[in-house]
Each structure stands twice: as structure tokens, then as C-alpha cells.
Length: 99
Image (cartoon, rainbow, N blue to C red; front, side, top):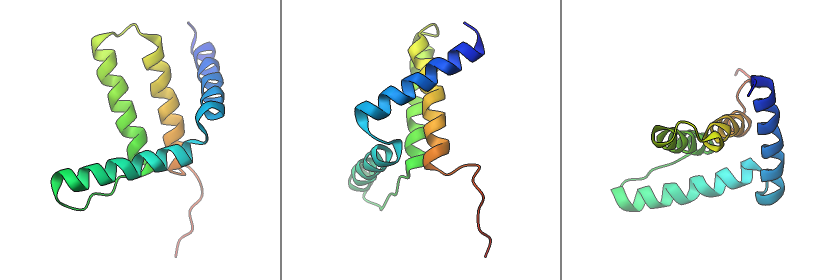
């Protein structure tokens, strides 16, 4: 598969996922809150997980799966998709105000 075709497929997947589950911003925020609560309870110290952290955690999960089955296209697509979501929810590359 060529890179451009792969990226086009990932774009379509992202559109479908947003229709099914809602915006990454809302979903990743919910996941971040749940992981934060779990880790805070489990570790006994306050833990704050961000939406960007969720994207990284999901990418790590997919990398682990590739370690088991390097030829599984879905995992490769998901890594790119989670990276794109991480850029969006983390406002990466957007101009910032300096104070």
C-alpha cells in the first residue's frame, strides 16, 4: 500500500469514528478523567491525565499490539489516527499567546 492511500484510508476511518463516538476532544476528556480517578485511587496520590496523555497511551497500546502482529494493518492505522487526535486535542501546532 502506498503512503498516500494509507493516509487517505486513515482520514476516512477518523471521520467514521467521530460519527460513531463523537469528537476526540470529548471522548479523550472522559477517558482522561477515568484514568486519573483510577490512578489516584490505586496509587494513593493525586494523578492528572490529560487528553494528550490519552492519545499517547492509546499509541503505546497499539505499538504493543504491533509487537505481537506487525502485519495487522488496523494497528498501524490506529497509531496514525491517535497521533492526529493527539495533535487536535493538544492544540499542537497552533499559535500560542505569550504573556
